[in-house]
Image (cartoon, rainbow, N blue to C red; front, side):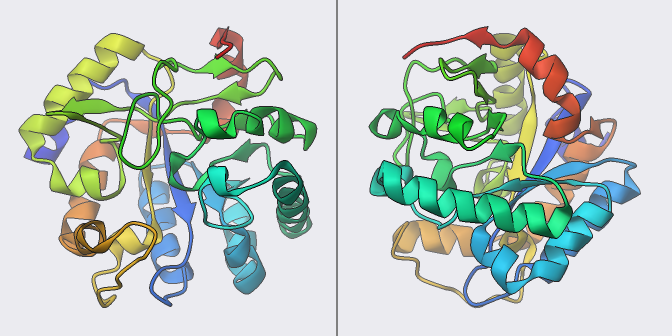
Length: 281
């Protein structure tokens, strides 16, 4: 058993492979998104692709292709900014337009939403009701811990239902020193050593049970040709970490996929919703 595969041995066999489809550093999202679709299809799996509205506007053929290849198209928002920077009015108008654009491209309104930066926090506590009013069935936007970027301390690890009826599927997190990190994706998946990933995976499985395991990545996580971009929204150190070691992403994703089957959130939603307990902040 390869080290990358052993790192995830404690995790359930059923999970959802998710992708936050957004451009980065001026690069189009399409080429690397297609590599991720190829990876899923080689494993006989489907995933959920959370598409930023800018991608839907600039690369509509990519959105149609994601849908045509059997994957779920969900929304990553109308702008890549934290929810705390939104007002209810700006969010409703922007999300209605983003929802309608995806519906026009795929033939069906999206069921799911993921906030940029997992930024559904107490400061944006009005968002679940707004999403429900817009017709969304679930969100995958809460980091259930305190975190330097965003977080909702005290939120459940397992899927839960907001008072609005919206189902929330929180990001799997684990503790590394003083930090609680969404370890199963992005730069964390490629930077953390296998023994640490194994420890975090074991601890998460113990806390959340079968739950609703999911991973996440971005097209740029695979893009080794991209030049370093200093991002104002995350700072120079995080920009460097987001850029470095991208060659490690694909082997980790392959290790996660081996022996597991990914199904889209849309396919799993009836079972997830049935098990989701009500939670009121």
